[in-house]
Amino acid sequence: MPSNQTPLGALPARFRRERLLIVGCGDVGLRVARTQRHVRILALTSSASRVPALRAAGVTPLMGNLDQPASVKRLAGLATRVLHLAPPPLQGHTDPRTLALTRALLLRTAPHSVVYGSTSGVYGDCAGDWVSETRALNATTPRAQRRVDAEARVRHFARLRAGVRASVLRIPGIYAPDREGGTPRERLLRGSPVLEAPDDVFTNHIHADDLARACQLALWRGQTQRRYNVNDDAQLKMGDYFDLAAQIYNLPKPPRISRAQAQIELPAMQLSFMSESRRLDNRRMKRELRLQLRYPQVQDGLV
Image (tube, rainbow, N blue to C red; front, side, top):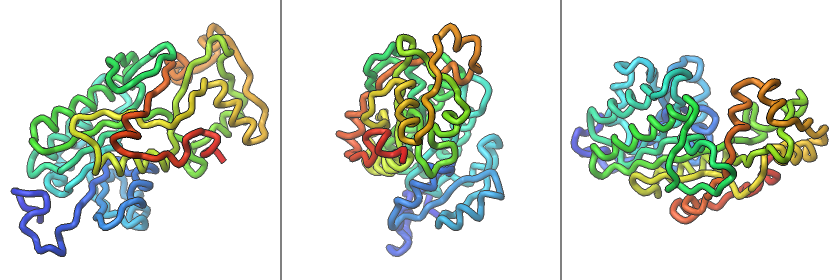
């Protein structure tokens, strides 16, 4: 077992291998696992059905549930680095899951670095402005407010443990052709409408593989208490994004409707994404994490 004094403990040299714990090891987590070399990968899972897939990917599964804090105390002292990708609950304005994780990590020797995958929704509506990481948060939906709470808990954890580097990644829409629901194709086939040009909003994206690489780099290069926008270089409004996808897939372009029509016809969740407009500035990601995007434009990654 790891020592209570240092993350790698007083172990023989052959055992002093970095250990990465992935909390929320879904599609992106597995992509991160595939990028690792000479690192032992552990993953928390609450579902026994996920165990075979994790093992097949070379990941050691650990059973536990963030909704049952006692079950995750075993995570204390296990890892030298932690990647937290588990989403908050679907209700409320806080994230008790991140609270349970950080409390568990405080029980023994803390990891060298913790990376949390948040959302760009914490900025709220920015009326199409360019948005850097220094912009004040303005989360207006409970979904985004839960993420603000999670970010604060991760940063508070790092303040309690000297030497821990905590990085927050603010992530927009994730896409990839090999990801379930990872392209606009199904929505185009349904003929779901988008906003007319005068009402349209800027939207941001990141390919799942580039996101996985950003997570990996943040674990090793992220500066403490640092926040990073993780997005590609595209500057597209939502309707233009779907028009571009329609062209790539040789499908009809989606119908355009006014915002007034959208408020009547569209479900609340879809409408919420059409109510916020911002352009994320990714220069800090490129400068500090030194990430070179493989898919700088969405047309590079949709095919």
